[in-house]
Image (cartoon, rainbow, N blue to C red; front, side, top):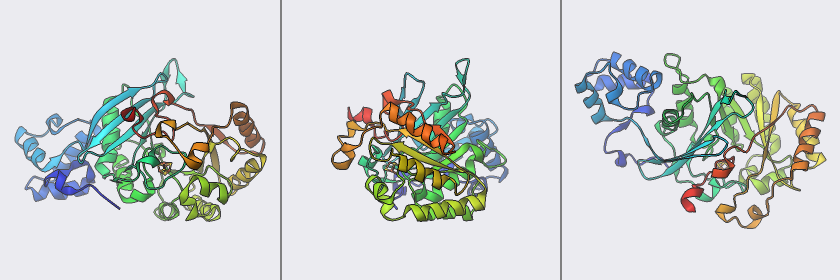
Length: 367
Ligand code: SF4
């Protein structure tokens, strides 16, 4: 898998690529006492300072020495768009010119006196994506490369600097398939949840996969305590294969077994993401098959309205996809509930700025 060409960094290192232990080693190699690494770590993740100059426990000389060795922030914020519903979309440029987007979503369901209790940042894990799902705007960008751990972390830290309220949750559900960048994503998780300077608890972090089976098994074997979501979107292999090419590689039966294995290893309930398409996956048989799948282990189903991606000029099967009309959408929810399925509805936050689920593809840049 392609990575960031290190020549671009001109022998400098990305500071947030390293755990505290790794940073201690690097710092001592520079002849700087080991304890300085924990001061840097506290300032970066505890106080969330934006530069070495903000680490007041370091002398000016030391700040300069570290500045010469490390790149403090790996992303540059190019554009920030705010939706009428409060959703914010961030466009970042990386050191090699690649661009990615992140979306900050205020939770609508927990709005009390105008202040949302939950603010979830949807983070990208790859520049582009190789998986080619028919309903997704990111698929049109193809894969440029995997993101570095620092680039994953800096989406959060930069978005936090531009958010009035604390970000409370993270979902790896932006551009890219997180399981195809497993090591860098999990290292970011380890840094976010580092017990000495925790940014977030693992319970507040969700990884969403299109169904990369080896990643699910690895999360189970490593007993990862973040939450796992599967983009299901169909209850038969035939329809799923039409929507998501990855379904040709891993069948629903294999994924079901892997998720059961994951649940037995971690005891963490699984979320199924289900975009409802008109006439494709919205029948009574789909309700029954979904209900059967969810009975295998504790789980819930997030039903998501399909968001049009006309701005990508879709063709073929992609152009045929239509959102299920409202009445069908609510009937499907009702039928799932009647079949004892735990159901949630994912809102269409950020629709007016093309920041809703499946829409991330620099639409504003292309307009
Ligand atoms: S839905 Fe996710 S996995 Fe599928 S193409 Fe889009 S970004 Fe990639």
